[in-house]
Image (cartoon, rainbow, N blue to C red; front, side, top):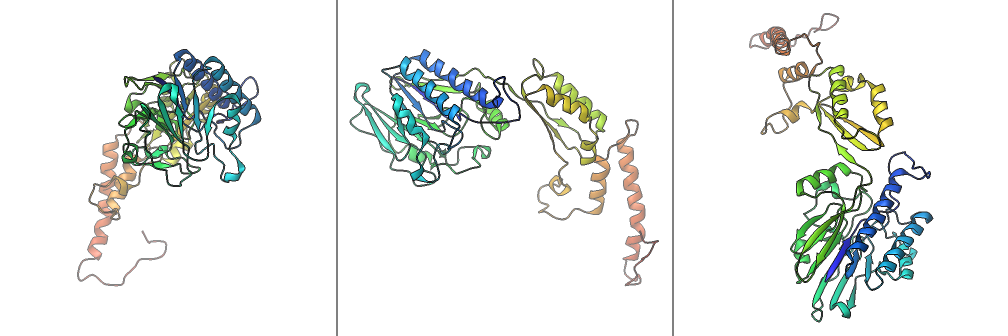
Length: 408
């Protein structure tokens, strides 16, 4: 009893200002092709049931060409697997704010897809001895009771939402909060499989409960997703094949249409602009196959504003021209109080601490010894501080303040 579990297609997703040869947004075309490849692979797998766990579209009102594209692909899926039920639920990206407006996913009922977009519905498949509780996004409203059907041999929960306390911060959507469910709620009934949608990285979150992940990088933070994939050993984007009878679980990668590469960060502490330029060029040369048509990020940490301003922007513009998208993420040095040891309690840094931090981060000529430079600066500070300290000793004349052009 094998099920295919897909989620978060986000058809219509657009990003960056590049067009395809057909005149469409290039990333929109990438995402559409990823969906087509996924359906090709599902057809090859010949599952007994197909589950689509929400966010079929990226917007509540997708463009007409994208609606037609989705309709053609789902028609192709139903035609290739005529005896395989296809169940689809609505995600938070699919649902309009006003319930009376209607959800575009209802259109897919015309090609035999069982669409659940308004409220939780239990579907029965007697030929498979299977029951599916399909729970679309409730847009922040309480979830229904998540219970199994005792009369069915297999019970599957299909749900779009966020598992509370499990997902990383970057996975939070910026438009509307999705449904929220706890691990305890997912495990209160003996589900044979829980098919989740919303989080874009394939991941197990409870016993027999999995996110399939998205089919492409379709969030505002692809770099967070790449980090999550590395952390959890996920090879990329794709969908799930799961056998309810044996428990065998397999992630099926969908070949990437576009490479996303997060280069090794640069620490620009105490570096001159030319030094940073050389390191950026070296990182760019390390991109496998070159910059052409890839999406690349390079983080440069600890770089003061005046150094970033004097970088070779002509070279940076050339990197951006070659890549589909090149992001040079420059980050200013942290505040001194953030560098202080724990236990400082946010205390205001002293003048010597401020001066030392400035001297340690100031751009120097390559022939200057930084340690000697910092030592000399701190020595000068001590010299000018001594008269001030003497003036503040007991017995010194009170109320004296030097003003005018001779004031320090």
